[in-house]
Image (cartoon, rainbow, N blue to C red; front, top):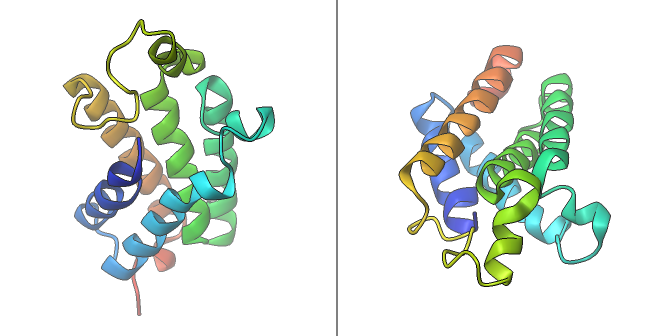
Length: 143
């Protein structure tokens, strides 16, 4: 979804969900940094973190780790994967269709995304954030 979603909207959604602003910023920075840590263009393993059902598996792996360790950064990684899984479509077909000229809209263009897709991305972000907050309430608020 690009930096606007992974950084700006993620931070906004987390603050609205009750996360401390500093914690929300840290989570959002880790979310947006995930593309640099695991560029999808650098091989199959990295692309599985951004596309289709495997991105969902990575999202849940990172979420479990975040809840176990209380790591805001792991939550950011989980959010990146689930946001990409929602936005890139089943098996990453949105990107494939775009590259073949069958889909005019770039799957990472938030402004051009249909409203139902935007709602799915926001809801998925909220579900993961709530799950993390319930498991690690101390990690959501700054002392």
